[in-house]
Image 1 (cartoon, rainbow, N blue to C red):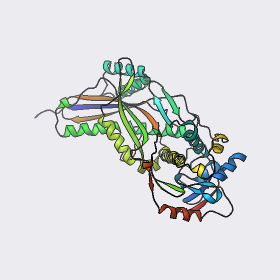
Image 2 (image 1 turned 45 degrees about the vertical axis):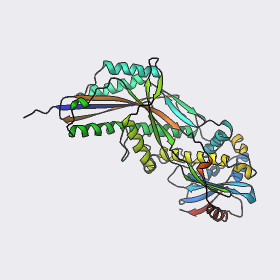
Image 3 (image 1 turned 135 degrees about the horizontal axis):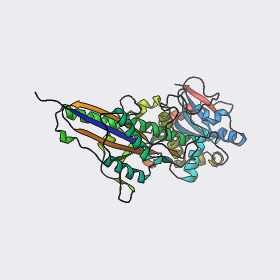
Image 4 (image 1 turned 45 degrees about the horizontal axis):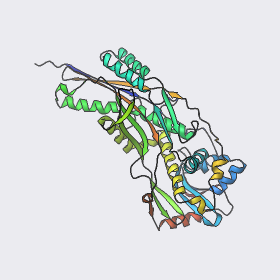
Length: 423
């Protein structure tokens, strides 16, 4: 009888990513512990008056103004021609983080003044990547000793060292920056099997599944290759292709779709210790990006930073649509009052550098005596870069009926916000 030996398979993953958050499971309901009278009641579609918001900014914003009337999901923008007003329309969802005046003001400033796309990244020190490659070439993974394997992983994490946090387009201490950083961090945790979400496999698990399938199929052991250098994958949140899309009619624009997912590309280290993009693809990274993107919206309610990030993309797309269609000018208003006279109501502390993440998994399978292992390093961030063209807007004559119905709900006594309908 042929003796079966053990194939020892070790997969390691490292993230050039964010520092561990005190609530890494993201089970908290809200990012900011803040209450206002508008953050109560059933789920509703609501309207917010920008002329009333501007008035409050001049005298000092109320709590309701600080959270844009409780609106979490911005859906549309309307012009009230009779009152020279621009109205934001969106959903109040008690279980979701609201959009904040800080968010809106910073996005207006970004679009109308700064014109720098909003993003965050965690940049590796390329010299540390070079050190990692030397370490991988000189040290064999202790596959049969869990204690030594843990020390090995910690050594790899130490070699990567602290990563530089970079924020662009918004202040480093803003709520937008905070959401981007921790959404990115949580996504990296999933990619490294440090956190699990249903039906989203990590890059480690994707590789393990492929290897186990090959073992079961009886493929030759020479299919298993020891890798002596680190594989570098970049993952970043981005609006997906052909998104966002809007419907538009007289005095109203409606955000139909704003799909968010992650994109990936490969990088390599040059002889001069520079990281450069390369055209080759990493199958594990590609599969992870596809699975994560396909399931992001369905799992976003489990992770407060994901849902908030998706809603921030919607807010940013809507601000771009306001500028594209010149809504402030049409309503005889100017965004400058909101941009220039508003201050940050909420300050977030984000460190200058963040720790790398590392993880390892083993798989033992009775089919031979080979050792297979590889090291996967992940970096990336969030990009809110959105370019709107006329193709993003589809004229819909029926949309004016929705506007007329919503306009009939405007109260006689002017208010900051009011309900349109329960959801």
